[in-house]
Amino acid sequence: MVGRVQQVFYPLSLSAKILARIHTLPPKPFWVIIMAFVVTENCIKCKFTDCVDVCPVDCFHQGPNFLVIDPDECIDCTLCEPECPANAIFAEDELPEGQEHFIQLNAELAKEWPLITEVQSPLPDADDWNGKEGKLDLLER
Ligand code: SF4
Ligand code: F3S
Picture 1 (tube, helix red, strand yellow):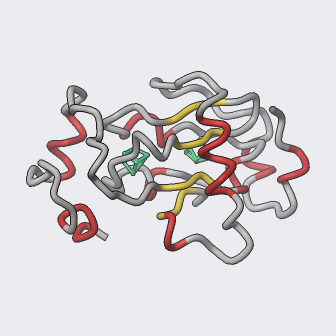
Picture 2 (tube, rainbow, N blue to C red):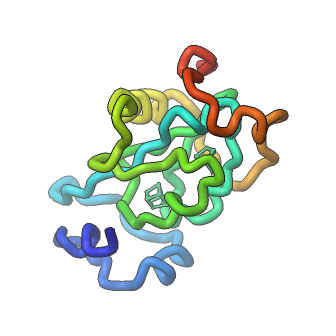
Picture 3 (cartoon, rainbow, N blue to C red):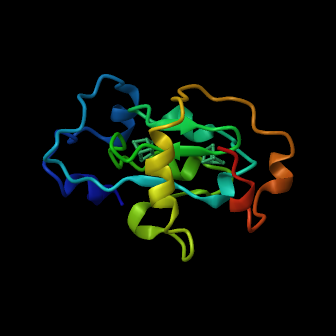
């Protein structure tokens, strides 16, 4: 996973932890190919927002009951993935079966929804909804 970042020519020789403290990274150059991380179904109706706290480049956007990652901003640092209590974040090439459509959904909704840069309280009943299947129909836009 860590090696992924090192596979591209981009000034990311700093460790991920140092990167997390730097909020002044330049925009991703057009010639850089970095796969994005993706928020998947289990975030719906939970929205714990722990992920937001660790993202060094502020690429999370929030809707009423779901967060998405802007694939144009994500630098693939991997920091958000282990932070999610709902295990809803995956690398684009490691998505669980049946969650592939969330790649397009993240890209689409990131352009519509506002940035979120600070942790918020989870949604009411987040713990009850954590792990439930079939939540896509409950996504509010
Ligand atoms: Fe932000 Fe997660 Fe992408 Fe890192 S992997 S830049 S924390 S969205
Ligand atoms: Fe959603 Fe997990 Fe972030 S539930 S808001 S992706 S911490």
